[in-house]
Length: 421
Image (tube, rainbow, N blue to C red; front, side):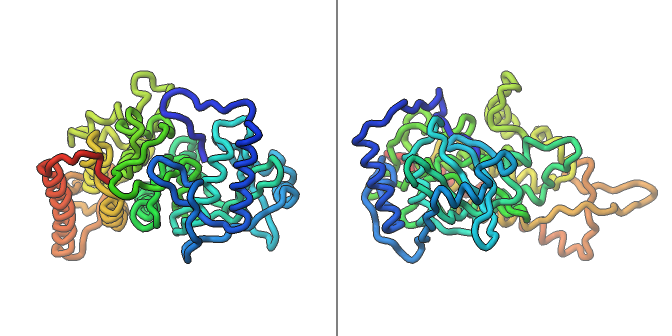
């Protein structure tokens, strides 16, 4: 649950709030307590306005007292500390019936404020999906602002990619593909299945949480926006996000679209492939991952250079090319040429179904045979029937051809006056 900040510069919070604004916030919080409704906004507005009626998909959140959550976290002791982000500190707690939860406590001096707290309560009261973290409840007692979520035992994707100790094994290829696919499903739900649609605006490795089976769930919806309505093709808003993940057109214009999220997802894919951070000051001229990788994304001969050294060559070379091709599509500078979330899910479902399993190679004349196009350290299973192998190759070719046709179609289609969704 990492911090969020403007793409350029730091986000400032006023030292004091006016009495009028405080009254408005308390009024909004009271409304949430009474109805747990989610509000719909017009383009450019946050979801804290214009409440809509509660539907079947909404989830009534439990209201906690501060004393309950203090007891659950042992008075917020260091031993219950999980992590810290822009919202504040996250603690592990145990509520009644021995349910383990994560408790996120607002830091009143932090970069995210009460508006984001309210947005997140409202969003998660409506949004329910296996690949989104579930909110159990919240506390808005006095000046205290806390959120209570389901506990995700393995923490964030960021920690498993970038904070791996020497005695730990990095994520293997299969697990990375499963995480990518599950995250894409969560994004697809926000973009195409939630009513109204939602633009996440803060997709990054630290906001993808993992349960004990590495099942991924998107978290932290304080910056989320409802999608455009009517004739509008974008939401005009203040530029917010995390450095290294912001789509270039959004960073320069403030015009937010679903394709902005797709770009951020491409950055996450690149992190999964490379094991590098989206932004790393320690790398000097190569601090921005996308800038470093872009030349190699255009040259298939450079694909192996992109791969995380921690994988030690244990990845399928044929699938690697497909994942990199998909990543390059998500990172296109022209938003209209990026795939939508549904197409990404279809592609990653195919790729994650191709489980990589190194096995002993067939030996002929004391010489080990390697499959053409695979990595030097990869071993392959000898398929029982040649037809099985031919079918797998045909599927891969069909997948690539489908993407090439779509790309050609997009490039030949006439330009639209607005950024397409």
